[in-house]
Amino acid sequence: MTEVSARRALRVAVAAVLAVAVAAIAVLASSGIARVTPTVSATAATSDPVILTVTFSRRPGARSVAHLRCRGSRATADGFLRAVGARRACAHARGISGLLTSGPDPHRACTEIFGGPERALVTGRIGDRRVRRSFKRTDGCEVADWHRAMPLLPRPS
Image (cartoon, helix red, strand yellow):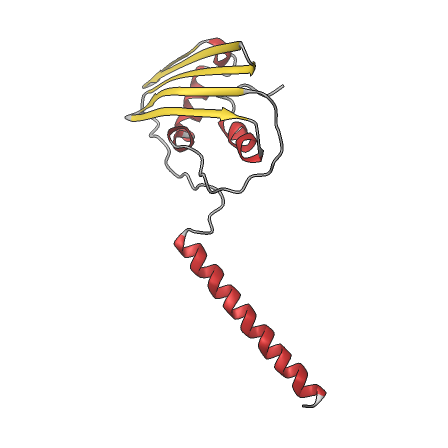
């Protein structure tokens, strides 16, 4: 085999491996197996009533509780959510209702970066959907979820 034909054979082999890799990626992507982060597209309608209680702690034993109530154009907030503004908090809660009504994807890949000791629990209802979602900052995925849920959750210290 000459040097030219050897290079040509190598190019053909590399092209074949690349074609198989592209096909495998396409199959995985279409089946949803390769999904690393959850796709949450569900958002609540702007008219859906929101009734939430947010319990937050920066350290064990030190709890803060806030309530959010939204129905039609009326909105009220107490506790640390008062500083956020009831209407802003309601709009945000409706916008992330998919995050609040589902648990994290157990198969997502997360960095092992500790974000802090903060913990939060959001309970209640958005429209006819039940909310019970806990948040913590123990790895990169949880830190990202926390940031996505802000301003319903306080800014970490």
